[in-house]
Image (cartoon, rainbow, N blue to C red):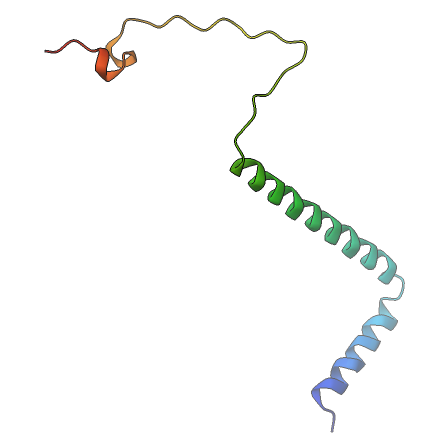
Amino acid sequence: MFGLSELAVILIVVIAVLAAKKLPELARSAGKSARILKAEARAMKEQDKAQEAPAAPRIIQGGTLPPPAPRSGRTGDTPPGDRPAG
């Protein structure tokens, strides 16, 4: 009777005939999806490359940093070498 390849061709033709109005929209959607996927892959590669390179200090224009908070005298805040023996 029919082989697998003939059935696949018939199925593709039937889908094309029945969905002729939707095909341009589907193709456009597939193209957008491919572009988004490509852009995300490129962004991930750039992010990985940026993490491998030593980070340069970031300069923020027009802003000032608040002064550092004073350290309390609690034991949990002191480094291990500065603690009194006992």
